[in-house]
Image (cartoon, rainbow, N blue to C red; front, side):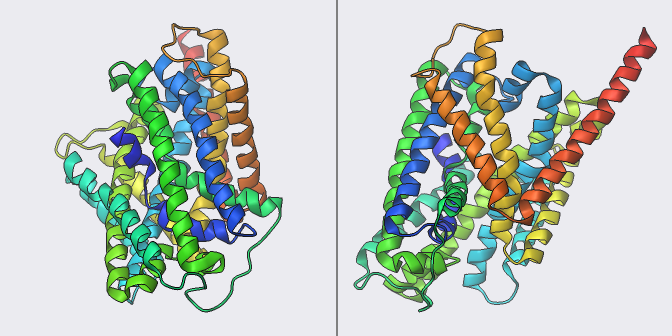
Length: 429
């Protein structure tokens, strides 16, 4: 359960609340969005629990999609992980570092800090230098410690409410704005699906995997509701919407500059840990892509000297740096990276939900766990994923278009690979 909690509890909770608040009409809608996000995440967890326990494999989603739909869709998913989902996640986490680092020290813009983090951690991983699991856990625990400090500070504010800048901020209203707010909420809950990548290594997955997933979501939902209530209590709805570093603003109001700098430092360290973990796991996915598809074999080369997938790391880092540059150009780095990743992420989450129906029919196995209320539960999951796919396309900006265009390039690459594969098959006949 600790691994799953560490995956979900990234730095997003210190950045997305302001974006959610600016897209809902009041405090009640704000807290409702966070509660709904936890409920929908639990529905997704139950669907993934069946897939992960029935078809355990280190490939996770890639394995489910390949079994249900074949190698072509699996290739597109692996392409999306390399070029959009994982690299976009690296960039958006790096922008959290940038936003809070800019509060700690004047000078470079958040985009510069984000690019420096990506370059430095990619270099360290490429050199074979990475923190051990114990060090990674210590850094990730900074999220929990930061949240506890924020909660304590928020409860101690003598005169809660109001904007930290003194300028009221009007929130958007309407279904479109609420749909966009849920994109940010569910991003913050994201990460539980990564547990499927360790399903093959869990003892008695039918019991232990399901229990860990469900309890993790329940704990995170309670924690997120509490911390967002504290944000509202300390800053008010308009104050949360106005902030780009909501945790630092709240703690500064309660304890002054020193406390704000302490919390900002913890958040920077925790976000750096999340960036490092995402770089590490993302490069392994790219390595597997190169290993499975010979024309991309350059990605599947393992460096014996550094014991790393060196080419995969460098290409992944180059893409993430390009995304950091795009975020800097738009001057809304974090929001742009969410827009970039969200449509592609929700598309493949929807297809993974559909794979549950397909695999039950075409590849039935003895299932240690069956999703309750089938088929209602997976239909809710697919419906939610479909709506979030729609919302992330309809209510976002240029970032979403770029992300879908990059996925389209993957489709063209796939066509080229299929033509070459058919040509080789004809030549051998």
